[in-house]
Image 1: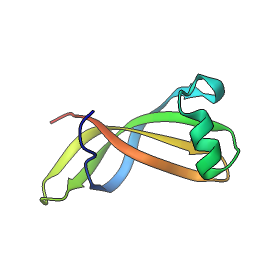
Image 2: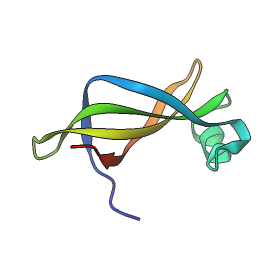
Image 3: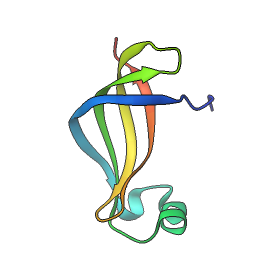
Image 4: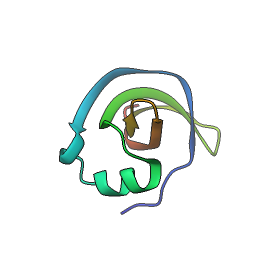
Amino acid sequence: MGKPVDFKLIGPITGIETIATGAAIREIRRLRRVYGPGRWRKRKGVGRVQLQDGAVRTAELHWYEAHGLGTYEHKIKQYLD
């Protein structure tokens, strides 16, 4: 696995889709242990990000979210530009 990329989300995420819910999420046990129980979803979408070096790119993002708990662990899956 590659090294995590630090980035700042600038602007809204568009084209949001649910990839997996509940038991279909491989990390569900860890998410519940770390962040708490909830209706967990793995989501994806497209957004503009600013990287540590100042570059602004469009990227496909993946993250986890649960109603009432928020969104966690945003990660860049691929750059689109």
